[in-house]
Amino acid sequence: MKRREFLAALAATALTPATGWAAPAGMRLKAEPVSVRLLPDGQGVTRMLGFNGSTPGPEIRARQGGRVAVAFENGIDSASAIHWHGIHIDNAMDGVPGLTQAAVKPGDAFDYVFDVSHSGTYWYHSHERSWEQVAKGLYGPLIVEERDPPRVDRDITVILDDWRLTRSGELHPNFGNRHDFSHDGRIGNFARALVSRETVRRGDRVRLRLINTATARIFPVRITGGAGKVVAHDGMPLAAPEPLGELVLAPAQRTDVILDVAGPVTFAMLTGRGAYELGKIAAEGANPAPVKTPIAPLPPHAAPKPDRERARRLTLAMQGGAMSRMGMTGMMRGGDFWAFNGRSGLPRAPWQRFERGETALITMRNDTAFPHGIHVHGHHFHELDENGAPGHYRDTTLVDPRRRRDVLCVFDNPGKWLIHCHTLAHQASGMKTWVEVV
Ligand code: C2O
Ligand code: CU
Image (tube, rainbow, N blue to C red; front, side, top):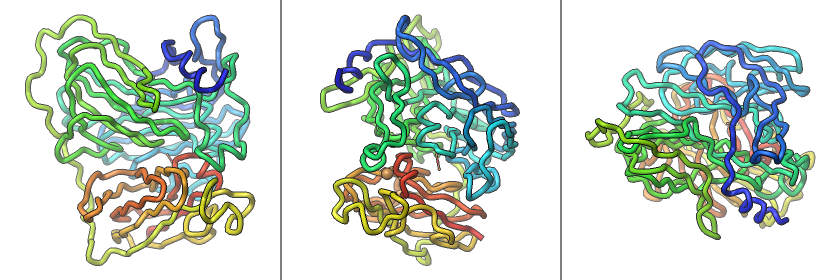
């Protein structure tokens, strides 16, 4: 069976995520092997990795202004570390082996303790051999609740992911192969939306927190089953909610939607061959007292004001990969396929050193034949449109092949921060660098 047919054949089946949603913000998080019923009954279980017996790992919930304390234990047979994606975190807690901490060896532990200044939808994932460990299941949602949350009847997390499975339902063992590394990463043959609730009522106002946890797949998603608005991207509230159209989530991106439910809520992936149902929330019964007020913006976050006039102007050119004009040889070290500005892998010295609070205007220029979702650790940045007007405030921005995007970032968080493509095979194969804020 070809991969595409396999994906289609499984379209109608239900995935049962292991248990473990909703955990307190002071907790133990143990990485360990898990078995998940990914395929329908009778088709066996899939051996993966998870936290506390489940993949996705438990949903960690904290309150804005509060503290997260996680005692991480490494119960898998390779080194690991946890990164808290999108959090403006204390650098020592960022979870990047080789830059902010030593990798946690099998059997060892590490305490992550950090304050969360911004509410919103975030996630955590392994940052060691992430192209393999995240693909095997080492990730989970991290939700920071507003001090003054919007009124909704249900708050639902929706994880978009895909897996590459063999016909017997095991994870395909071809991790780290050259084709994935030089092309678009480990694209799965089975994609799902994992929802934290199975039912809603007609008339409910629900908040949907979409998180793309895939290591490579960009999800174009259509949500049906009600009228709604987009209220946040990458945890950051939109000044004005936007109409709910087709959403595109690059790996690691999040989008919050508030939806007034009119019927079953479905999540479909739009493909060249039509819509493919990723998941569904059934509608049962009716809400006797639906919220009638218009969907309002989420409470705004205090964000540092960029100084455009004095911004440091930089170019971050994405290079390499298959089908590239420059070819894949010549500039790469150690068999890497990808580079930023002619340099693959983590340089010993930072790409840039910023004074705390300095603004950078970075042109992210994609000179390759593949899209890249570029993530800056510890910060958010403003995407600028062609006219230079600020758009969304994000931590990961998708740049299409042969296109460019300017972003404006205030580097106000001291420490050493990674910048990399969130197609994790690209990151592993050289597309990364780092900056230091002093
Ligand atoms: Cu979500 Cu460096 O990663
Ligand atoms: Cu990439």
